[in-house]
Each structure stands twice: as structure tokens, then as C-alpha cells.
Amino acid sequence: MTIYLDNAGTKKPDEKIAGDYLNLIKKSYGNSSSLHSHGREMSKILENCREKIACLFSVEPDIVYFNSGASEGNNTILKGMVDYALFYKTIGKKLPHLIISSIEHPSIIESAKILHNHKRAEVTFIHPEKDGLFKPEKIIDSIKAETILISVGFVNNETGVVQDVKKIGRELKKYKSSIGAKYPYLHTDITQAIEYNTINLERDLIDIVTFSGHKFGSLPGTGVLISKTDKFFPLISGGGQEMDKRSGTVDVYGIYYLVKVLENIAQKRIKNTKILQHKKGKLEQGIEKIEGAKILFKNSPRSPHISLIALKNIEHQNLFVILDKQKISVSIGSACASKSQKISYVLKNMQVDAKTIRETLRISIALATSNNEIEAFLKILAKIYADYQGR
Ligand SMILES: Cc1ncc(COP(=O)(O)O)c(C=O)c1O
Image (cartoon, rainbow, N blue to C red; front, side, top):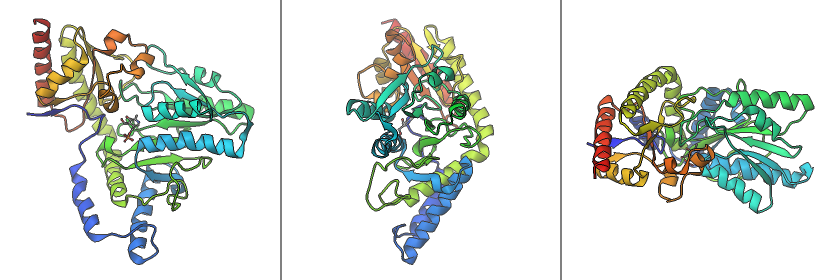
């Protein structure tokens, strides 16, 4: 038996879409930028996908850009907005200023650091409170005349903590209307949020979102950037695809897959969220029965798919290897951090002490995770832990 508990790392592609996907590959081909009938057909499929995404997020299709995923989207927004502001001097002669949550995915943190180190921007990294949540007032207080962007992720990928991005949006709107400013824009990475939250850019006062398809059951290498502002330069230039904001031939097949999965998710979101909450409840009740085990950020709002646990006095690397030998896949922090020996900056910035950080495991479930798998995992974990302590 194998047990997959790393659904926040990537989720098994939704097989129900595979038939339609294969049919599309068999039936339609051609470069979506070509003017001939084959190209026009692909372009029609792509534009149809764009309209569907626009509809799901309550925006106009012309602000929806397809790309390779959240890493690309995040890089595009941070670097592209800074370069645009520098080139057009939209905030005068000073360096553009960014307010960045310190618990973001490395695609945001590293981009911000590069901009800062290359003296293209000034960056303020803001930290959450002990409960993992940001205080919107603190974010607003960090705004300067040169601030062009605030970036706070919706759901943290290591802890599952859900930020009140809508409240940040409301506070920012108040602030901007009070001084009649256009900047700063509010960006939120919704990669871990999209499956269990309805996000409406108008209602929620969010300007920019980025996400990857493979986190909710479509294919790796596909993603979406939605931006109400066009004041950013493309990261990839070339043939001018995606309204000049992202060159390169679009993976129409992959985008088709992504949109189909997302439409299914949107239809069943409330029901599926409840089912998953129930599953996570079972998992966490079981964890809490193991003496020495605890759930982190238990009392904060959390996504139903992520549970960060810590087992006292067993280093996560050791536990990870033992579980892996039994074909149980979990994660030490985020997937990309798992390969490095460094402790998680995310947990550090969320005020988790260094010892506990080294004892954390991220368990992330999906609808496909069966109750039997959860029970089997709990039994195996309890046994491993008891054996380890009795060595
Ligand atoms: C919140 C968040 N943002 C961005 C990414 C990057 O996604 P990708 O590797 O598909 O570009 C991830 C992946 O772990 C993530 O969890």
C-alpha cells in the first residue's frame, strides 16, 4: 500500500478530464498564433478558456494571462511592475517600494530579494503575528509614497493558515481613496487557496492573483496570472502572445485541462470543502492522540487540505525517511524546501522555535485521500514514533 499525503506539493491529475484532453489532442492542433484555420481553431479554444476563467473570477477576459505557473506569475508581477515603474518613472525618481509578506513561496521572496540586491527596488518584508496572521493595519502603516505593490498570499503553503486578504483589500481601498492614490496594488498568490475558496477580484478588492494548475488536479507547467493593472513589463518577451504580457506559444491543451478541472471544482466547492474538513478533523484527532505530537496553528483559520504537525524529539528528516521507506509520502515544509537542509524561513518568520521547526511534517490531503489511508497512516506513525522513542 502506498499513501500519498503531499497534495499541497502537487495533486494527482484529475482523471475525469483525461478523456476530453486526449480527444482535443487528437482533434485539434496548430499554433494558436497562426492565422490559418488550424491556428484559428486553437485560438478559439484558448479564448474560450480565457472567458471561462474570467467568469470564474468575475473579471474581463482581457486581464487573464496564461503562463507556466505561479513561479512565473509571481516573478512577472514583482519584476515586471518594478521595471515598468522604473522605466516610466510612475512614482518619480525614487526606487519603487514593495511590501512583501515574509512567509511567501520562494518565487516571491527570491524575486523581491533580487530586486532589492540589484537596487531596482526597496523591499519591506512584513512578518505575521504569533497566530500566523497579518494585521491589515500594520500593512497599511508600512505604505510609503513609493509603494507600488503589496503581496500577501491567501493560504500559506507550509502551515495552511488562511489570511484575511479581503480585509487587507478593504483597508487598502480606504487608504487609497483617502489620498486619491492608484498605487499600491494588492497581489495575492492563490495557488493553495483556489480549490477551497471562491475568489472574486471585484468583491474582494484584490488587484492581482497568480496560481498554478497542478495544485488542484490539472497538469504541471500551466498557470494563470490575472491583473487589473497592465503596468508591468513581461518577463518573457518574443512573439507578443498573451496580449504582449507573456511571449511563447501557449499550451492550449494544458490550459484546456486546467479550465475543465477548475470548472468542476467551482461547482462542488462547498460540498467538497466540507468533506475535506471532516477528513482533516479525523486526521488531526488521531494525531492528537499520539503523546508528544501536536498540530501547529491549530486555532488559526486554516485550509482544509493542510495540517502541519510536530512530533517531539524526532527530527523531521529521520521521520520523513522512515515514512518514505514505507511508501508514505509527506513533506518537510514546502516541496522545494524538502531537498534542502536549511530550516524553513516561513516557520521561522511565523515565530515557530527552531527545535519545533526541525520536528514538523506537512500532511496534505485531498478528496481522494480515503479514510482507510488516514487510519493506516495514523497507525504507522504512532508505531514509528513509539519505536523511535524506545530505541
Ligand atoms: C503558494 C505557492 N506559490 C507558488 C508555488 C509555485 O508553484 P509552481 O512550482 O507550480 O510554479 C507554490 C508551489 O509549491 C505554492 O505553494
